[in-house]
Length: 458
Ligand code: NAP
Image (cartoon, rainbow, N blue to C red; front, top):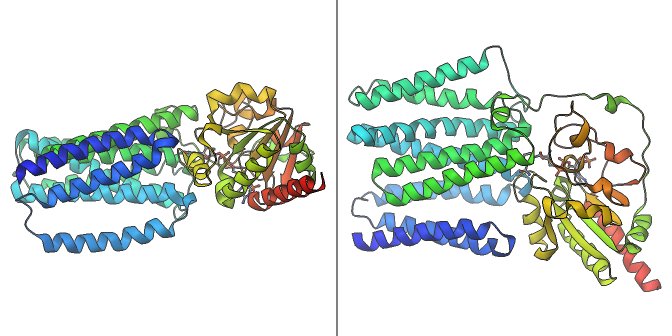
């Protein structure tokens, strides 16, 4: 039986690797998810078959409790709330790793390298647990989203971490001194809270990717502590992919890691431009339909508002209608459009928009200059020209989509309200910009209707 379990573990590890590979492209992403699920099923079944698993009734009770929380969580939380749902999942995963570590410590009191791995596992597990709960609270706006800062914060945090780490080292040297363990666990939990509160809500998705990485490293350390190779591999994959993701997100927003972790970004900023009176030009669905109809090349820029309005299916209809009329329609995807990496890809895939129409920012940015229309739908920060030249702007330096290079820019949103970064967008006041005020789904539906009416009349 033990042999069969090892084979299942190897298969499962291979499936995890393939899963990550496949999930990196929209065309194979579904297969990637299935491979990941199959890998996890094999891992769970393999573990249940191990001779050292004895208490099936407890496992069953835990399974019921976990499902009772997990299933409604998956179904009830909308797509736009995925970042906070992910934060909660990390909190639970990290707590599980930390509790397994604590149980292992009190049961076996390991020594040497194993104790070192166990200390690493519990430190990262506990701090990721409270850190992820803070991230969840901020994203769900249960906690203040602005950075909570005070004088000497970084020194206090570093000192706290150093004290927690010292207790960890002391535990490795003297594992039998069990009184130290609760103090070590308490300090780790507190550090998780203090690490996250100075970070603004705007940086939370990046922080969640980083916490994902910590949870993975904790699981990997748990693999060493429990002598489970699959956990070592899966944890390392999780740890490294979370880290790479946070680096990609930092780059896409032109922020450095230290800036995200210590920069207190997201404080309310009022720019002079916000108070100045400027005029905007707006257009009706009928006018917008006419402009689109006479265009040859249209580049659509989807953003967070598309997800809020759930307008992806209407957008697909618009794509179909324009394509039928010989208009070339492409989609420009900014790496941090929406509220999580890949948010727009997922939305558009849901509506079966052909993958070959989707282009990453670097691929399509030079093509806006040849586009007749840039149609921005519920996007804001990702096409704010201030990022290029306004040094005082919080998004200065973030690479943006060059929508302002298109002949005509049309922006569907409900008002002139700012987006995630809380700043005004000069794009809305440009001469070549037409604001299409309204809910994305309703406005797109009206445009599609106008196009259909025009086709009938022709
Ligand atoms: P955004 O800047 O947040 O703007 C979204 C716009 O959608 C808002 O200005 C809002 O304007 C509009 N909107 C909301 N509901 C709408 C509806 N029902 N119909 C039409 N419009 C609607 O979005 P973005 O351009 O996608 O930029 C993403 C932001 O999130 C960036 O600042 C990025 O740095 C940040 N972020 C993203 C990630 C990620 O992984 N994707 C991670 C971290 C941070 P109205 O209220 O006027 O309608």
